[in-house]
Length: 342
Image (cartoon, rainbow, N blue to C red):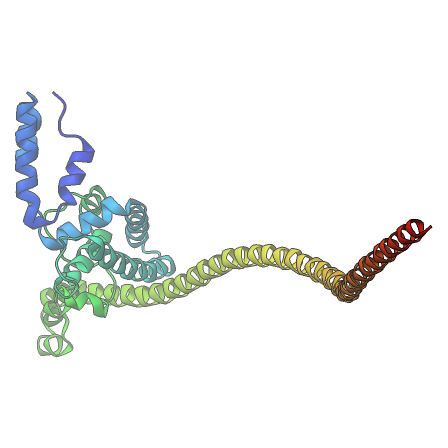
């Protein structure tokens, strides 16, 4: 029977530690109900991670590309140390410090996005930093970090270079105990027994080792300086690329808004011309309206005068008609009387 899927395991290991056991037990019960006892047994063997290990697992699961960069840089750093390539080792060491700092900041952001994560002030970021540093010196730790399956934080136990201040937050035994070998090569002890060839022979290897350590320390210092320079150059190149991308976007936006501005300006100019034409037409219409209103007013006055004249004429005509009728009646009466007299 196949074991638990990678997605299920990742889901469990990105679950906050205080809810890990409940989520794991629920997954075990689901596997048993589905008739997969092998998967159930494998799930039951999963152990709850510490908060620091959970944060590292969260980083590996949410941002695998960043952890992949860390693992690749760790491989290069270990190779450079094995080959004692001073300049390259110093350059990679500076990159390591920059990468670890960036990853710790990313862990802080990821934790802030998790609803059930501890408060920011209680995050064990020092243990996270120690674990990431340990990944550079221990390939097994690096693989566990990459897989997102850490159960507890790892400690930085020395990487062959002068310890950095941030490492003292985690452990105090980063340096090799050189002082324990010094009694074997103290000049006073050699002068006290010059006749002892055997002791002199035993002290010689210690002296050689001390000289070799000094040479390595000098080489490491030179490597660290070169690494810091390379990291600075890489950071400047990264910033330059980012600025160039931003410049390209800004120039594209500038061209777009300039085109929009040109179009809007033309539209505004056309609108002003149309408005001016309308205002001219409106002024002409207003003038014509005023003339028409004057004509209408004169026409009304003329109509009223005509109506009055018609009334007077009609009255006069009626009066004249009445006078004619009266005169005709009188003439008829007069004619009748004259006839009777004859």
